[in-house]
Image (tube, rainbow, N blue to C red; front, side, top):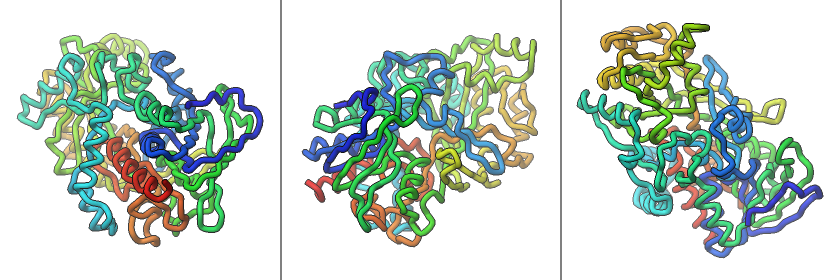
Length: 502
């Protein structure tokens, strides 16, 4: 069951076969699979419960309540890179665009070869992907839910002769409200809070919201439990303590928090815990059309292109609440207001390279993750190329002008050939307005304990019965959105755990 922790003011002690830290795509899958196999499971989630019925379309209020660090997290280095992760039952599945794609076979083969992951196989992972897609009703975006902004991208891609396809999403009867970032108002999105978490609960798992893990309890080189703070649901301050004793612990706290929890628990992984931070550093171009696009109607991200997939890059339609996107409009004062009045005529195309840049996560003075990230010139060059493709797509679709959002290039492009500057000139990383919501790698997987944190079954090399199940185990970045791959690896690990502890 999902417990009401609001009135838990005294210290609590619990026992279980497995304690799972985090209820996002990694933790929710582990909890559901283990509970259905008869193991007793306790899930600790630092965020509150979130339901579409108590959501709000006002992004400031929503993001400050349900995103880590109030939605203001950034990675700092040679440029500013915003990065948002949710803090709620269901994790980031509650605020992403429900895009599910498996990892390319070529990248999995690269991991197997370069990191000694001989226990992995492409065929095995395909089985996990298929099971997850069936569970979440993953289908290409339905025509009636696309809305004008996705059809604009489709029109542009087809005129250019580029690959063009509907994005596969985990939804049922999507109404095209374009509110994925502030939680689906109709409940159509197949998030963890409406799929895996309820199934885990019905199978006997105990889920505790507003319980923030502090560290993993260890006896020698074995994990034996978790110590956590029970948070007040409004003030988010500790009001009591919970101790869970378990045969195994699964850390699914995400790329930013999982390494912090491991380090607090005395696990450094030969210096690799918190290092190797990888990210999809995404950016986008706006196009203004004569026709009304009304971007707030239609699937948030319903159309895409793999034309540049061979370079590790995809193109996708994109939208967010106007209060978020309108910061990209040019001008100040009356000029800005004039631009804002035309906001209903804008469409948006985004791109993200696989990325070769790296960063690091450490615990800051306030106890929150502190992230550093240096964008390499190679990624800046790839971003410029990808943005040119975005601009070209919008002009091909009939845009009258395009805003590429690149400092050092024309802020407003009025004809297709204007995009050539993005390839003729070399732009430093600081030229782009990056957002990196897909992050990876801070507890990377590998067979060599001197160069990785977990083995091929996601168990920490230096601590038995301690597993990591989120995208922090990825050795490198991937091309596609990571949720399905997180879930597939977590399902695989859950079955391994069940065989060991059942």
